[in-house]
Image (cartoon, rainbow over all chains, first blue to last red; front, side, top):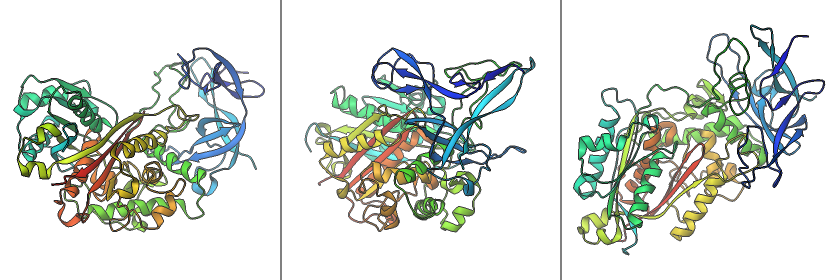
Length: 130
Length: 403
């Protein structure tokens, strides 16, 4: 199997891909970026916490792609068990007929391509749960 | 007028739109000179200058402006606070006067944005032959189109849609937001300073090119060139000026600037709600007026989807009731609380740093009874709201002079 690298460092690959957040030890606020401190309470100590992979769409849009050959895409905010994350709807057409507020989705991964060394970058997205 | 009251003495906005023959200094000078003339004062009366030009934030627009209209040696504050830059310039001058450093000052906001296209800072990732994690997310590629959007039309589309998730609406969301836009485009037909003056039906707006569902092109603020400026004066100083100046002066009953307090999802999708609600609450308390007292409101409709949520955030309606409030016709120019009678940013245009003073100009125009064809009759109290992503929110409550 080719070497893989996650699109972002808060995506954990492997048999059960999932997101991992930096959780403030003092107040429990969760963040996905590198932290200097906690925006909620000012604390400076963090632990890692796994985020559930199924949840509900809190909001969406469909961005029209104006570049020739590019596809429209559907950014979403998803509530994964009480933690909001950003991402995009995949594996379903990005149009208003196939998207709905409150729709149930699950995290899944796909390759965004290989680099010159043959390493594949893996991104996450959300697909509808039927 | 009490000594510690703060007043707008003079104010001006240029026409918004395309100004190919003018640079930012020309536009800023035009607005600044006109604002001072409007107030019957000159640059020699100014004790402080605060100026903003977001796209040229490092260039020092304040001193560039002075070099054209008067280098008097006064302190200059060059400010940058996203789309709230103009309101921040005004707030800076107000604070200087409140602090007793001077009794009169000038706030200016200017931008040249015609043809700028879609705005929004992505997460930059250096190009490389090999996937290399970089930045605070250790990303190997740019986020845009892979992990959502940072383009403003899409961000604010999600802000509006999120509201409809929290407060479910049985009707068609696309048509609802297009209706808000139609109201504003209709209002623009009475505003000769608007970049776009075109009455558009809901159907026409929905038929425009889709930018980020449900925002079509007509539902997005127009990138424009323009400037706005205001002369601020202390109550004590105003009492020494002419009766005519006192009569046309507009009282700043509240000037509030907030940033966004931490909320669970605010680093995922910007939370433009909490800081607006807090600013509005503080402003109403300080001014001693309530939303029911407002004769008109200019709020930050950078996109049609944004206007809806701010009805609620500014407490113009009961919590969760923004859709019904709009559908009742309350926000039309003949309604209970006219909103964006200028045409709003969707038609008036949004030269970023000018916006936070231009919306105050609109309110003053009505409170002075000088708004001509689009005058809201008998207007005594108005509210101007602006929000810059990041975020910064400015809310000003203005009242007609009692004279």
